[in-house]
Each structure stands twice: as C-alpha cells, then as structure tokens.
Amino acid sequence: MIDNIEEKYSVGALLYTPALSIKIAEDVIAEKFSKPYSLALCLEDTISDDSVEVAEKQLTDTLKKIMEERKEKEFYLPKIFIRVRSCEQLNQLCGELKPCVDVISGFIFPKYSVDNADAYNEAVRRINESSEKTLYMMPILESRDLINYSTRHKVLEEVKTKIDSVKEYVLNIRVGGNDFSNEFAARRHYDETIYDILPIGQLLGDILTVFSREYVVSGPVWEFFSSDNEEWKRGLMNELKLDRLNGFIGKTVIHPKQIGVVNEALKVSQKDYEDAKEILNWNERGLLVGKSYNGERMNEVKTHGNWAIKTVMLSKIYGIS
Image (cartoon, rainbow, N blue to C red; front, side):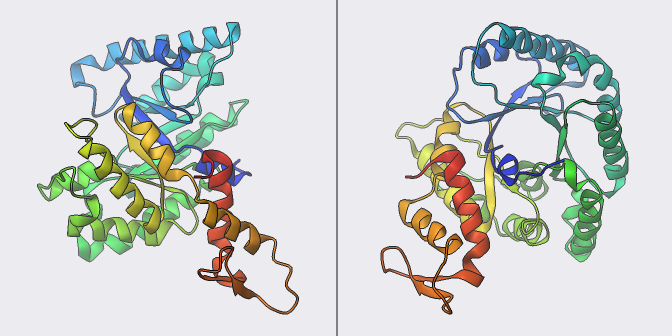
C-alpha cells in the first residue's frame, strides 16, 4: 500500500521506450540518462501486432539483464513500469515476469475506461496477493468515451469510482495527450502548448478537477526533442510551467534529452521553499496569516497548506533552484 506521498511524486519524468529495444538495459546499467527518472517499457502503441511475441521475449531479457547486473554492482535503478496492451496480456506476463519482480515497480494500463477497469483492477489485486512487494498500477485516461462532452463528467466520475476501489495500488493517473489530439486532428508545434488546443485543454481541466485533489496526475507527452536553436526545449519548458500551475506533476517523455528539462521544472524555487516551510511550521499565536519569506506576498496557513506540503515534497525529490 502507498503510505508515503513521496512515492507518488517520485515518478517524475517517465521515459517511454519500446519493449523491443535491445540496448535499453545497457543504457540503464551504464547510467546514461539524467537522474532521477522512471522507465516505461512499452508493449502497446510502439509495437506492431506481428511483433508482440518478440517484444515480450525482449522485455523479459531486458529485465533479467538489469536484475543480474544489479546483483554485481550498484547503479541507479529507475522505477520500471510495463505498459501492456490488454488485461489478457497482463495476466499472461505475470507468471513469466515473476523472477524479475525485484526490478519491476508496476504496470501501465492504456485506455483505462469503465469497460475494462474491473478486469484490470482484479488483475492488480490478484498480482499483489501473490507478490512479496507491492506492484503499482498507473491507468492512462485516453479513451474515446471521454471526448463526448454530454457524457464526459459522468464517465469521469465512474472511472474515478473504479480507481478509488484500488486506490492503494494507484501510483499516478496519466493522460494521453496524443490520443486526444488525434480525435480533433490537432498537433501542437514547439511554440504552442497542449493548453492552446481548446477542446483538449478543457478536457485536461476536467480530468484534473476530478482527480488531482486525491491523486498525482502526470502531464501529457511532449513530442519535440530537437531543433536548430533549442526551440523544442523552450517549448517544453513553457508547457511544463503550465502543467505545474494547473496541477500536473511529472511528464511522459520520449527522448532522454527531455528528462533533465522535466527535472529542472520540478525543482522548487527558494522563495516557494521558504514560504512552504514557514506555513508548515507556523507558530504565530492567534494569527494564521502573515508576510511571505521575502515580504512580497501573503502566507495563509489554512489556504496554502496543501500547496506547502506538495512544495516541500518536491524539494526533497528534485531540489531547490
């Protein structure tokens, strides 16, 4: 069970790579990526239907190699998640992956919806009943039934009820920005953000409204990782700023160069850190409001308490800028 909020915030930059990758184990062992980060080995959208069996075999080989090397030497071990194609595949893989459980943090469920939630939830319960360690789930909200505005709010509440029933195993809620973009035939450039696409921005707002008070919700993928004058990086930084402001914590990334940018965005400013500490350690008798650390704004214990908890937690994991 999740009894430490730090675990939820520490997923951070989640690097996606196809499970077919034959070099990802070597890259992890050689610590080629910025730290901290998490890793998703994907068996779904990145794998063609006729390559699934090969990808499953490579997945097992990758996990075994990391596990065996971990016995021989110390290196940074990210949280490793497996993104499955279906609940049937999850059930099939569980037995095969049991010898590698020490290096697995959990599973990612694409297009998690009212229709498949019960099957996924039951599988997660069953997996954890026979596991010596907790294996978490991260559902992705990206199914088409969220698009229809007339039923969206009902569907979101139904999905939340399903997720609440296995809350102890839910590490993050994730969102599929590209799936939503596809529905509207939209695609942002590096000088635009997901929030500029109004229908998607509204949908993301609805998801945050339903989930972010109780769960850590991670931001949608950013597609750009290269450009002549690093416009991609400035674009990512701009979207991360809006992610953080609106309540997303962490982000799906598709290139190692993006990890450091996400980690930098998750750092806490010195001003925010000092204010958060002051709010959490308030000792003014009778008064619950006062000037901020540098005298620029108001600190109020009752209305800034949740922000302060999150701020201090992020500072512990990602540092202070």
